[in-house]
Image 1 (cartoon, rainbow, N blue to C red):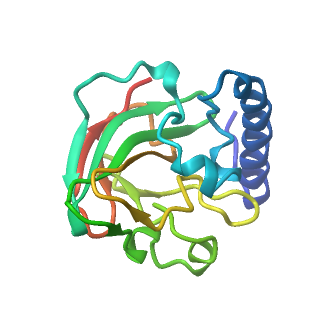
Image 2 (cartoon, helix red, strand yellow; image 1 turned 45 degrees about the vertical axis):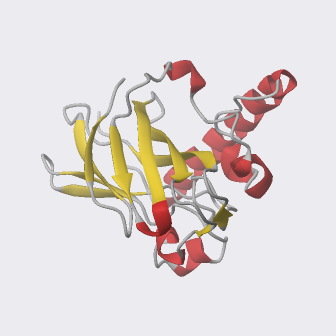
Length: 194
């Protein structure tokens, strides 16, 4: 039996994921961290806290999957890329200001789609490229057009870092190595687990 996903079905899946995430997040909030899927709805205040990032259950290793140097002394380390049963891939990482001065987060990282740009600074311009199936996957959005990624940060102080996440549609399970792309940063091949 084949299943065809229409735009309405996809939006319903995203809403369902957000609702489940909010429920899980509300349960986890009492412990002071780790609210997975609630991040997209809590943009600026949740995004800037360095103690919580989506997917702590993944047990990310000390060694990042990839490290990319961008403009203004910015350094992006990808710590995990986890496929989940809902048909999503969540990429977790750390964005750090490696320079000795305040770094302004470039607008280009949000991408050039008006709907995403209207929701403030984010990592909405990121994509995953699956060269095996010759497809490009864009950051998912909720039903109000907000990107399912860390949002609400415009500067990083010298030496400051924030935990970041991005959610993408999942490439086929036969594709585990994909290329992560973010405007103004070099591309990097990362391995999807799960």
